[in-house]
Image (cartoon, rainbow, N blue to C red; front, side, top):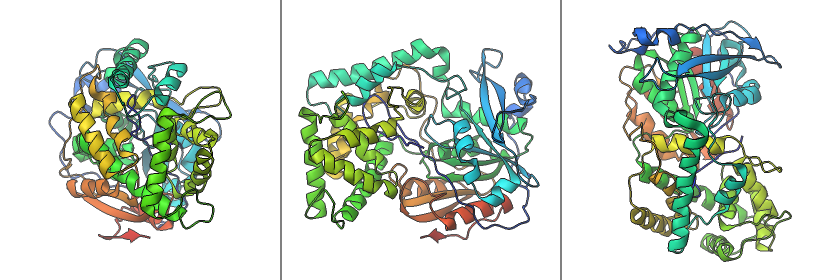
Length: 508
């Protein structure tokens, strides 16, 4: 799966997905126990106005290759349950042996399709897990087959993602502001009222309806990257319904937008230094000298591309924005370091074709110019979840500070905050330490070299949650499940048998 991160002013993006290898787990699965946390007085499952949603019966139909598909109805606006509704698309791969429940999964984004993810990756989860759970994915509201958000046409996206990510003068700054406003207006025009209700808290309420429709008393859930934000807020909102939750590559919900962007700048800087350090050991590395020398050489390439975009084999040019995006794409896994090095070598020789291809992979842009749907839905969800209240001058000052601390990518990440500054809908989520008092144990997986969701965020979330337990993977790349047999086994053991890894467990 392609991953998206905060780059460029028009969109603030983050996604994470991971596949798993079979782990070693007990052959006797243990069903999740009912929660001991008492339900809240305003539990929507007990309120008459929501009975029609909670009382639905899913009609599953075969949708090829061993999968079943269905849909579940939810209100567009949870504050108006008698108003318009939308249908959420679902897919499941049934348990291969004795079922102990359903495992709802979300691959991140925000904006990634859970239906596509399960169809692609269900067979990669651990064998004990697949034996014991129906693996269930869904397209959250505004995503994929659940009323996909549409904001701007593909040709306009081409222009926006290629635009200068660091304004050098008032004209470029005005263009950046205009792009952000045009994107928001386009969402209103092409999507309508739904685009104001695609926030995480609305999706969390949808998740509780899915739990009920699937017939589970508690929710068992695996969320990666942004999916951890959903899982943490579900635990905070419905602690009495928490079954077994695994949050891999965690987002820290207590961060404001400034702290969020700063964390990602730190994470990508850490990954970039690791890549360059490794590159300098290779004979074919395009950089020379010390780590500082290599960073400076990459910075010079980025700086030159502002005024002199690189030609490619197509009619498109590799602009500064697209060059940075290609580099960011290469940070998501150390398996991408070699192709990144080859692409940078060609770029230093004046050919931007390979780096443009990596930028296109990041944005899920096909050769015919079609973009993946996640680019349309990511910004609207992020902006509702992360209200940006700083002035342009404050954002500019922070961007310069990030460039000083995390060159050469920091400044472009700092300016990405402009994407939400003039968002036309009120924010629905505020920064908050989530404790989920009374919830069953929640397993948080953090990778020490994760660029998009830095390890410090997983540490923070695990410490905030009253029942959090941190599992650490030493290594680079985004999220941990599928990157380590040790992680896979620990996650499978918890989901299938309810056994947490010991405190302080680290997988190398």
